[in-house]
Image (cartoon, rainbow, N blue to C red; front, side, top):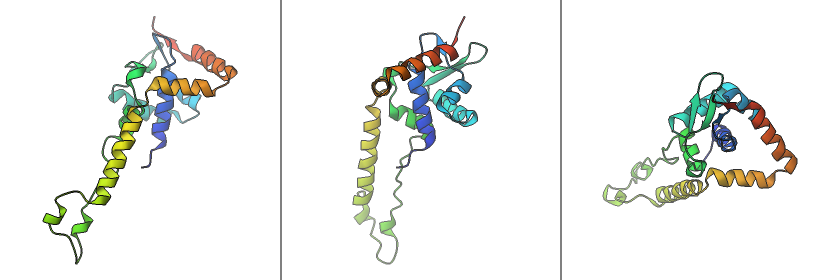
Length: 165
């Protein structure tokens, strides 16, 4: 399974939004600047997160993005599904029924071993990502960051966050 960079950018955006104080939002341009990614491309990811109900956007001087649900209810699978969709990565085309020695309908009443293995792997992948919630991600990033970097991130958020009046 190949996961696009949009999922990475969206997950990092959500982790940053999880750090916002109540009532605060971050403009999309600020999020893109923080991540060092192109604003127009990140805007597409934020729109997908918004359509999925993960983030909400507010326009205007005090506008920006914030999580629309509690961080503990948002998983890495939620973010991945919002960006890349929920269609399976493997699609069986029943190739075993083709060619000069193709299998009969009766022989194909169950998924073949190959399809079953891919389906199992995908289910395991989705379950694993569903088990990882945003607070765990934030805690891990915090644990792996120096005290100085943590202070820099808090200061950056304070400088760039917009507050509703």
